[in-house]
Image (tube, rainbow, N blue to C red; front, side, top):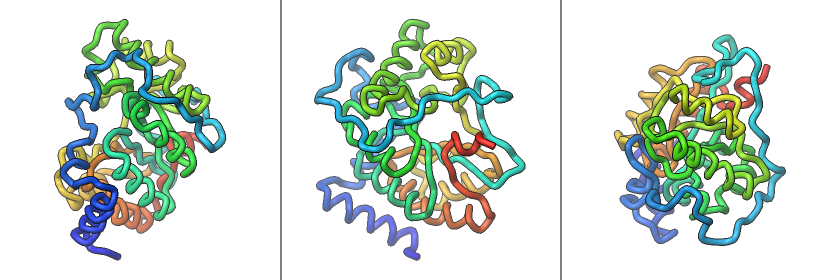
Length: 267
């Protein structure tokens, strides 16, 4: 297995081959308090190019899970499954590296994509679904959703939902509000109005958006993860790519399996 520095250098080599720098990859990420690129665009503005539907089967629609709360932060604690969930934003080359690392380690993940990111990179919807992963909604522009007026907050949710439906045939399997771990009661109601029975939160925060180094990302996750956990991670950060192989190895050592959020909650 490559050491963390070796994996970082391999990623940088891949990014250079794609004409990208590591600094650009780091700067493109999606962390709390950081609006997505293009955040000044109106939530209802049309995408810059023609949409291409996902080549895989249409994405699954949101499901209601009886007995689960309106906002779900974790799954059953008596099993062996966990969910790795990723905020979908940042450079596609880094996103593909995360997906490849997950697939190499036998993991299936849930990606909550930002609508403006899908506008700029519509091919990523197909790439995520073709890998056997879930694709969901992380608002249109990644604003501080809990602080917005009702009409604007609803437009942020429905704007991304429209992109997802156009690209995949579904509004996405899950909704996660932007720039917050927990939704307000209003945002939960708006999500339900938009067609999402549940809001997806998390109980483990990797803090990878702070670029703390791969070792710190690994510690942040493995220090608190347990059966049923939902982990918050991000595309767009080299530290996340570097941490993935070791993270999946540690999960396997603990006999934990990374599955989609829907699989986590399905008996």
